[in-house]
Length: 240
Image 1 (cartoon, one colour):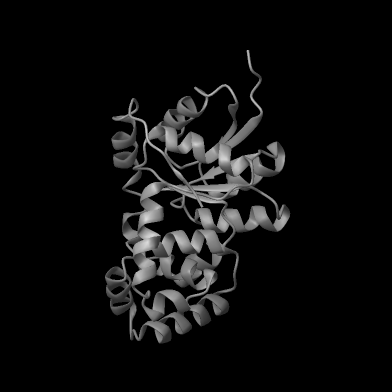
Image 2 (image 1 turned 180 degrees about the vertical axis):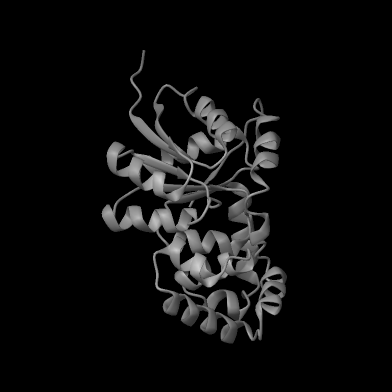
């Protein structure tokens, strides 16, 4: 028997999804799931305790997002290998993840073997993008992304996500570990960049840009079903 040499921390807030992907990954003799986490705080704790070779991270987590969790991990360990595994294939989400330090990005609509290939690539320090993501980025490269999306900093992007989901300023401050004054300043800057006078306009503009934050929590089960419905299908990924 070949000993597993790639340890994985699997981060997703849906237990059934984690169980399914754990079984998928461990079909490969060189991969083992060392731990699981359901939110950003637990993910960071498990990361520190287990020191996995690869963190497979969903973007949509309760409270702080996968981006925020990854930022904490990279602050502690700059060479951490984080693979984002998300339902979102919009170019702006991919860019935010890669800019924040992700080593790869795979959508949950990808064929099952793509995730395994991505884990192996990221473990070797090779950046990996699933085929649909590569196509989306190539298409976006031919059409310049709207100024508001490009001009948001990573922190502003996190604040925008929570604002659009209906969180109050005190709640956002608590979730991101910031003061209410800092969050209010971020809100003001975001509104100026988007040209929005209020929260309703901000949500409408974000939606037009393809930032469907309200879909974060509801899409994972559907993506899981679609992916595992084709467990027997095979596909090739795209090392970036």
